[in-house]
Image 1 (cartoon, rainbow, N blue to C red):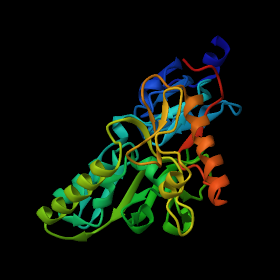
Image 2 (image 1 turned 90 degrees about the horizontal axis):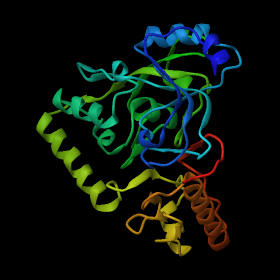
Image 3 (image 1 turned 60 degrees about the vertical axis):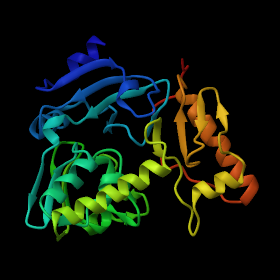
Length: 302
């Protein structure tokens, strides 16, 4: 540990060795980060990236709403943006949001400013950074529909501005370099009455609460919808509703959600997901693709 410590550049934010991640992700499962860095601000992050050792493995997590951390934890340095990256401002019909801002907070700020078109973000769990990485969306809208530009830091701390063409948006994915860490984005909406916007958002919230197990320990939609189909229908048809492995379960409310019913290990959750994929492939011939991001190394769960 000491040699690694000596190699790390000084920071103004917090730097923790063997930091537990279990309570930072929605599944409430998984191992620790070898190192967890919470930068004080953009300059702190940029300075760290510029001076970090070349062989230091780097990864980024948000609030872990669509993330499964394996039980062996994440080697190297995990960056989790602090509240300093969570500022949201409205200007005209545009919203500028930090990468650590919750998507729901961006939707509410847009509504307060009379900016329509961002209502769907109220139903997207997680933060702006994660939403950018995976072109998040729901109810027929996705990030690419409102995206103007983003600011990111590369692996050496240089600031880069990305346009829609730089992002190469596809379904549930952004085709940019893995090393880029988003720090801010600008979204475009249109003018409307705040009360009408809030009413539409409330409808989306009620739909989500009625159809998804959002009060459970879950990770959001587990698999991408295949072309022309719905993942949940394929999972249901394969007889997986309520299927369990240990304390991991396929939700009975919405079959494209895995839930931790107690103290499920990440291994149980991942194995359950793979069993669902196997049964769907056997039943329909369709191979489901993971939407949840699985990171880290295998290890022994609780």
